[in-house]
Length: 231
Length: 231
Image 1 (spheres, rainbow over the protein chains, first blue to last red):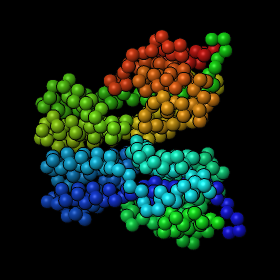
Image 2: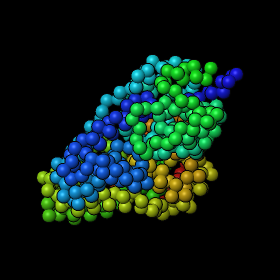
Image 3: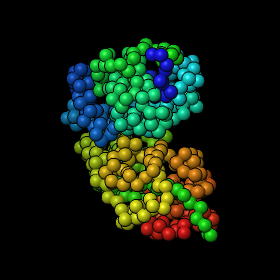
Image 4: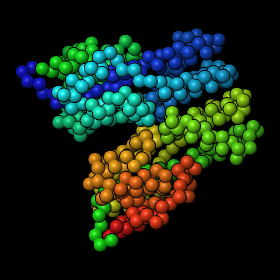
């Protein structure tokens, strides 16, 4: 590329800037343990994922919907004979997730200020509004972003809107994130560039095939590579 | 007032543009019925409100948090011996609320286009991001607003930010809504004008004394009065 066309970076938050899926996985593991007498752990995981997907149209993304889907699955799998301490524990686990300290991923704290010198940074994340605001505030990274967009879903229309209102259009913007389904594919569809930073844990719902042949697609191992990627 | 200083109207959504508290009250009445064998209805209402307030710091505002607080209260009040059909019904009632058709309040559909001719309209609402977006889309009113801000809480800082980024500053903006605590008092604190439209149902949490002597405070009975209020 002779000259970088990129003025604006959109950055996903969960599992791109800080750990997230880890806490869902730990909670789900505990959920499986609690119901081990009633269901095979793999089967329980499938039932929970099915409930989460079914409920997306009502709850959207985030921890509160996850809690409600766990409660529903616990009732279903036991035919409404679940030990009620299990439900109380689901409520406790959810609140625990909602107050868990933010743990930024390696390299994020050093790299984000360097990126902010070169690009307009926009945080683009989905999930519970309240929870995402809490994590951003607690991370101390908020001042590095010129815009924060907490959205209910990440579609091509979302990226077109955000990169137009906050930047100089999708063609001058790159979206950076760990989810092929939410961060990469719709950003490319919107005409933006996309940089995939895989994370070892990714929710099944977010999985997709990487568009390796797309001319505006990059894959890197760490946020650090973004500093020079578009030089 | 010799000349109207107002360029921008901030409009609350729930119980200002469309019914909302009615569905919470109906759901709560059903919740009390379901647990009538375990607790006096008034006491149950107090326990539920206490749980909601306690959980605000975790859940924020909205239906999903309300569902989780009802489940918690049902477990607590029965000492974890609630009939599990009650929990299943709480989940059903919540999903019912989340898909309930939007019912605009009288006068809203006729009046909003008139207001949009005179003022920049900004929707400012709190609650579940996903649910508020759904209601706005379903209302068909979205195109009348130059900005939509779904926020986790409504503070003076919220209004200062929104009326600066979308308008010409709080001193040229009026916030319109039914909640004294969320719509009126913080907007006045931010230096904006405030117009209270009382609604017959208001959540106890949102109640406060009207600042009747404040020079930038108005109270009206219907959104229709806004058309000429600042002439």
